[in-house]
Image (cartoon, rainbow, N blue to C red; front, side):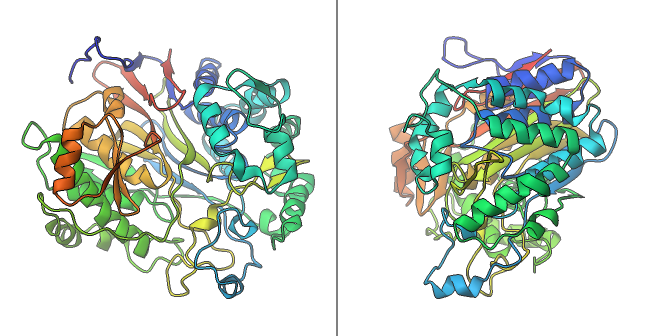
Length: 529
């Protein structure tokens, strides 16, 4: 593993022996570690951390959103949890097409799917947690009641996306209390959300999906013309399932199965495994080019095939077969970029990912999202719940596997990952950033297992992403590399926002040490004890 150059700005990888948490917000990391030190396990700590972020990162995540997780209980098989919600039973795709829509607008009430996060937390806690949900949610409740301080990246994003709240007066009153986004160092409270979290801690999932909270959510949606009903909420249930995986350099990258885009991450890494990316054989421009070309191939497959698992028409096994992957890899030339493809799905960046490993070796990789910044912008004021717009991920093409239909789960971009070796979890991994996430997983895999970087250094590396016909480059990529990529036919541009945000934990069984990383592109930290 390469040594860090301490003359270069950056931060060291975190190290600990008894437990580790990595999140995109320092208070969420501290909360997760506090839960570990209080006797909780990785699941307890992860729920505590993400619940807090639903209060203090409301543009990125919330209890009105969805949740996916991979969990590796010490010495037991890995399991996945699908916490995505369905479309309402009364949705009518034909009526939306009759409006002239070719896609679902991201601020339309029709984009709101049933929130799955609370059910996911409750099922994970009941099945694998050790502490009561009331204790686990206590830090989030306190922050919502007593207030929290706005951190730098939160303030930046809040101001940039405040316009998404303009269509809902209750949302503006809560999240723009002075008629603007709160600034760095200012405080905000959300007592209504605190009350809802307290009820969930005492009563479980029924406190959210039934009764007063559910009624307020339905009323808010109906006020915007939604067809959502009490029955839609009461009928929601996430589920445990088996992960999917693919080999890379002797390790296995494990992902949640569709309806998430974890399959795309596996396609990209399978394609890249056919290139010897260790050592100096390939230049930086070569690596960026190959990642872009593998991304194009993987995302074309993703957009054509991935949907609700109940409507998938192609099998994961066939998609990841040697024959299929070889055919995709053969289309890649090192010298020439393939033509751009227009994607049907919208670009978005707003999610929180966190990971925890406890002293017993239990490891969780968990992601929670509202989809776009502030989700749909629709707010249930008495419940304190901002609602996601995950339904914008549906296709309105009638013959597409991911076409909108009643009671259907949409395609999802949020994907947690766990890398295993010899049947044991080796690295927990997540890269926030909407569409970028599958590419981000592949990029991290190559930086760690091809280049030998520690996970913090791997996360710190400059990023690139092909989307909307252009190859976006972070400004830390040199002009010489950009010109090389242009010469191969890429339409490059320098991005105006950081690409993604990574958290990761590596389990060092030989030394009995945990290595933690949290992306410099966010406010967060990795911390252990």
